[in-house]
Length: 218
Image (tube, rainbow, N blue to C red; front, side):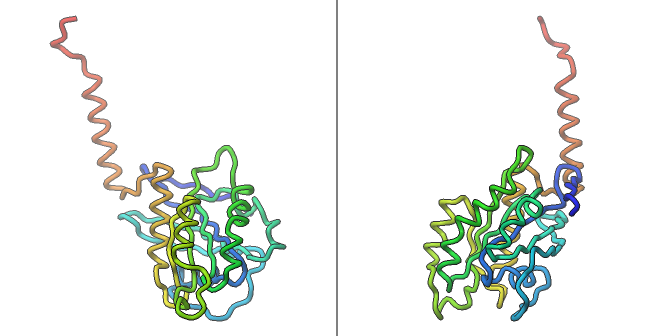
């Protein structure tokens, strides 16, 4: 598998790699198809290994291309490891609000990601926690919103309750992650025009600072 190439234009990155983790059946694939294709896939085969989805979006007037890796949720695929995690800018953890065990396994998934993705050149990872199947909140909810929020806060994650079925909060969650990554890595999501203006101002200021002070009496 080829390594991801990091691309920069001016002062901003335009290509991000995101890994999605969570137990089988929590709706990871359905969430991603809702985000990428804008439609709900009710039945699908379990992900074998990992699938790659791509999406290009406009965030704060800049084009951001995303590589989103949809990984298998079964324990036997934990061995996929660094081959899929390497080069990630962020990770999305997903659990099912009607399945308590999927929530209880979050620590395991988080540790699995950190063990395989971290290296000396890795960026500051940003995490997104999605409590999926919010459309079933009135029919068998097993994990409260407060529990999800507390876990996210204690683990340094941005939290959203989402529904792959009706699209609730799906786009908002991904935009929040993109902005978190940009902030953590000090990569401003400027348009090319704005980046060029900033560069010109900085050069002008540098020129002024380098001019000798003709009134200096020293």
